[in-house]
Amino acid sequence: MSLLKNVTAVTLSILFVACMSYNAMASEELFTALDVDQSGTISETEASAHSALSVIFSEVDADGDGEITYDEFAAAGLDK
Image (cartoon, rainbow, N blue to C red; front, side, top):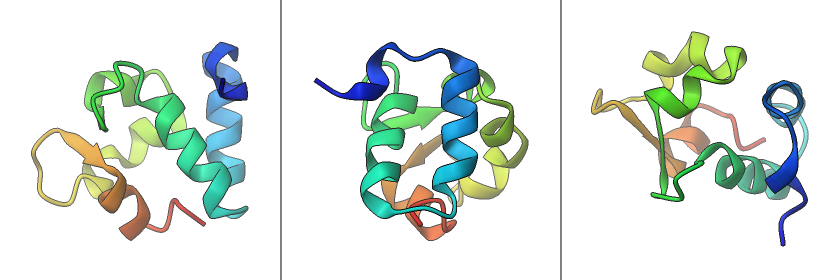
């Protein structure tokens, strides 16, 4: 079971910012935690719960479909 399953939205937001410059393994786990419905993408609704991601959502959503895939997440440099 992922350690990130039971953390608060505030904690996830803090981890999101930290993972932007930490490591890919942690950010993959963070991506999975941000993907609340486990659809394989982060919707704008899911992102809106995390201010750091909400602010940059449209920039990260490269194809403009209203969802962030892990590839878009990685391309934006959020996997580092």
